Image 1 (cartoon, protein in one colour):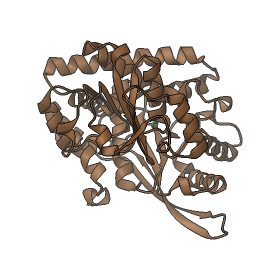
Image 2 (tube, helix red, strand yellow):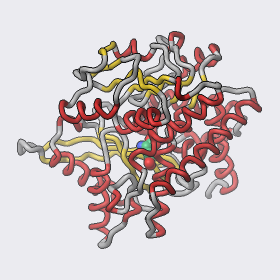
Image 3 (cartoon, rainbow, N blue to C red):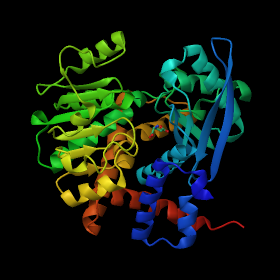
Length: 420
Ligand code: GLU
């Protein structure tokens, strides 16, 4: 029954990763069961008026994986393929990510099955407001704090803040993070996930004794995470030789001018027609030779079909769940790829969300420099812990990162005991 409710390939993948880690940690059955299953699974129907005058009912979800270590934290996505099982998987990953980073949060994720690219701004606003109002009994700065994810952004967070605050009768900035800076959002939040990815990728380069000025990178995805990851990598001196989005992929061995590409995307709506690089098959792009490969789009893109063909030295997982367990097994055997696992690699976003939440509680605004330097310190600390644990136990980086996160949660479960 539990498995049937969450029957989704992404959930199976997250559950498989959890089971492997729980076996490795030797978790008792009691703690294991309590760590594995989500605390709250919410499904709501969202009736909205379309611009055509018709009424349409969409399905929305929020999964709160666990509330033992603090409020639930995690993004809200608008995507056509979202369902309860996928959201549950993403909430579980958020849980281990927050614990690994030492943030006082449990994991959560939300989603609405819709295609934001085909919707008007008014329709998106209606959808966001109605979703938020359906969620009112379950969210708040002390219970569940949402943030942007795929298909959502700072504007969506501003609408959510407005609905929640109107209901409370006063401004409640800490109900969401990733909101506009002049609405008490944090400096540096928009670039945070991509910045963290690039920061850790350069640390991996130095572990592999590679020079950033001679290094190359391929980035799959040109949304918020992919764009800022590519931009920050290029600021660190790394040449971006391949980049893709849903419209297609580009390849240029001499390097792609990201500012020009962004201008092209903003004016035409696609990257494929960008004139100063060759187009390439998006699947073929992933297996081109490069130093750093950054999957920054959807889940399950590195599979048993392409893992053996990867020609990168560092795999920096900016997306959630980009590598399947079958591909993991191949990469582990190859032993020539330095993996930065997703829950570590993309933790910059939720870490700056934590800073934003703290600033909201303090009614204080930190500078961008302060935010980024605190972020770098926390990312470096988590990176070093994962590497040291992996070396000490002679285990892969993913298992090490998951172990540190899950162990933290398991300890809290044990300390708090089981009620009644
Ligand atoms: N959606 C982002 C993630 O998957 C950020 C979540 C947050 O900031 O709460 O990590």
